[in-house]
Image 1 (cartoon, rainbow, N blue to C red):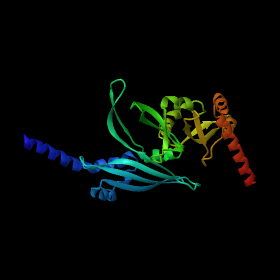
Image 2: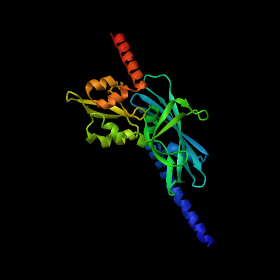
Image 3: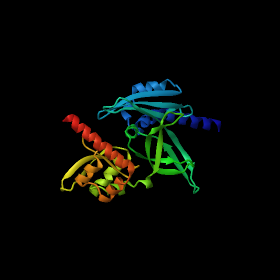
Image 4: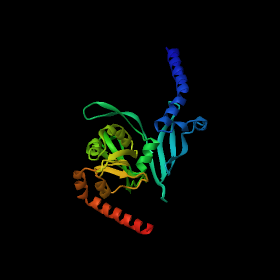
Amino acid sequence: MRSKIFYHLKKRSMTSEVNVDDYHKNEFRRIGIEEGFGEHVQKLFSTGNDTVDYNFQRKFGRDQLEGTIRFKRDELLKRYDISHLELHLQKADTVEKIGQRFYFQKLREVAQRDGSTIKHSFKVTVQEGYNLLSGRPVRKLMLDKNNMQIDSWIRLNFKELSPISRNHKLIIEPVASFDLKEVLREYTISENQHHALIKSLERGDLAMTTFLNNKSETERLYISPDTNMYCLNLYTHELRPVSLNEQKELGIIHPSLIKRLEQIPSTRELLKKITSHTLKRTQKIG
């Protein structure tokens, strides 16, 4: 009996050794930088240190992203799991960097109110981290304070830092509070574009799409969800925000949404700032 147990343990250990490189490669693939796994990383893992840091850089257009992946060793399984992903973003034409540390949660079973059990984990890809640091929301499954799983939009609160971690606090909003399909219908975007757009926008991407203006001509603009204002943010090819007045003039937004947005004080203030900024730029150029 003892020899049988020893045989099975030895067999399991050999299988783990064979598969550990595949597991590490998948860890890189899951966060979107599969190309980062190579000899250099394998050497870092072969040290057997409790933690291993992998540094990398990425370009997103004119934006520069620097990152560190912290791996933590699992002594039982003799492999490394991602503990956290730390990112620092240098936006084009800005001086200050924006940083955030995203803590990962391993897959675990969580009891729900109805007596059922779900498997839950939390991670972000490098692309999602960049999108969040760029101020765009990402759709994720999250746990509330009672450990109930909620389909959510998450975004960073750049106005508030956690006093302990010095991280930007995370704003979590139920998906039900911002129906992306419904919001897309408030704009002159044809429905056959909706499916592909939704997939991209849920990842937090800045998505290019086609609008039909009031002259029956097409307008190609970037869009992203504004879960706070219940609308879309629109941008030109040069990533200049398209103001509400411009959207009205082009006829690419539904009148009822215009009316609602114009009644929100923060929107009126934003419109004043955009108009003032545009006038100043025009005066400087002239």
